[in-house]
Image (cartoon, rainbow over all chains, first blue to last red; front, side, top):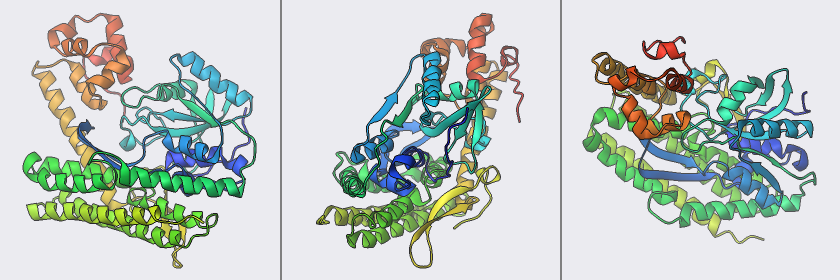
Length: 337
Length: 130
């Protein structure tokens, strides 16, 4: 059985899945950047004391699952979302979705995801894909980061739906539960709501290690890494920062380019010219993140390595923090017509 | 738009967002970027070193082969505990060579499943994949 479903490649898995699942009822209006922006996807967070893969726990995007949830919420689209303790029930529910003609989003872990290149398989459990059919024992998979559709056997799919560790998916499955078409007015309101959400998330979140303050915090930490960790480990930490920023799914520049694209596309629904100017600031932020990444690469490749080089890296992040703060303040101060 | 062939580029190109000459955002396909390929290489080099250190420790009789497979599968105590259903203190015990040697077949089988290897390969630190 194969549902009528058009695969589209996207930069980031969750905004790609969200855009694909809403394609029909939004009549192609919800693109990937719009899903990312309405879902208030842009973030920065550096959780102290916690290590991921023996390196710092840094994220450039909001918590997994929130983009789909907030996007549907802001659009007023009801959602079905289920987790399972039983593998059999999880598969039965998926089968039921397919029988009812609904492509379903699934949260999976990438470590045992067979079609992923080995180099990308870490224990990362917040990947998302869409199942849109089954032929014999093979599930038909639309993985938004792949160019074409792929398949997984029922065992392979079960294994990744029940991957273990942090953020374990527990067979999580989700889809929008509505057939009503989304209007331009709904789009307009959702966009404004998404922007306000993202402003709060970046400017008003408490604590010093998340939002724009978090970027500065990481910058200050980096200046101490060389003495505290030694050159080699400090280099590995920087490599981890760059991976989180540029790796598969970010659209480049730590999601800042996707957000800039969102503000441009938003302008078609919310005619406020400030959006276009602020979009440019996010492009600058993305460029500066990339400049910082090149500098970091100099350190982990061994071309650079003095304390001065680490200070410079920290200063880049302080500069980015100021830039993004100004961008979000400008968004905050928009007088919505 | 960087186009340096990386590990992912051999399997699939990836979507990136970039501005065209008029400043409008469009999507483009990238093969990868040297800066991040290098970052990924650093991560795997660290992993390789940890695996080698674990293997040496097992051969010296200071830990059971579980340590090798944990590093090989990038698993820490809590991930392995989630996959096998064993408590962390049990895994800690099983990391002792003497205790590991006396583990029952059914217990070994649980570890084999978690690591996706055959039970008989557990003791010899054999892995059958490229």
